[in-house]
Image (cartoon, rainbow, N blue to C red):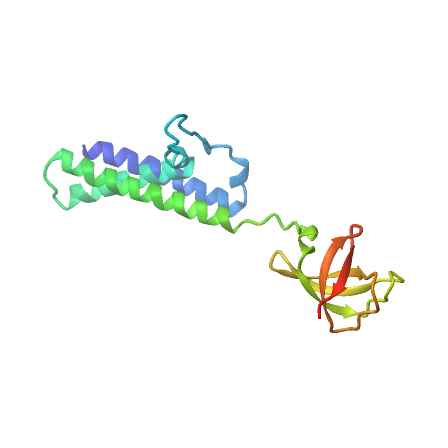
Length: 185
């Protein structure tokens, strides 16, 4: 039993050290070692993707390392009985695996494409930054919140001139950079 724990700890810790080194060097994305599977049960509607989400090289490495280390620790502490040592080692490995999965999902949630979906400005209330000439005679500028970012856009109005500082509603997108607005009373 001791040899099993020693081998899994050595393999797991070595792979973990290699993964960390690759991350530090910025090469971790080039290593296609992660297994990403999205599986769904058909009739029951039960989503089994959580289990398959656990199966990645990072999570399996964490399992091996902590399975081996916990097993060695149980040996050192004098825990009696092989099955109890296996249970302790397995629980530690599964806990490490789950923590890695939660951390990876947390990092994925932090990712952003950085693409501003400018069309989301339509329907928003904005503030006039530069006077907007009336009767579509020219463009002014507005500032509006889009995707939790304040952006400056060109604006036109078919109505009367709208002064700087006035509040407007973005009605529609005219072209890539210009929006039609109406004054909010």
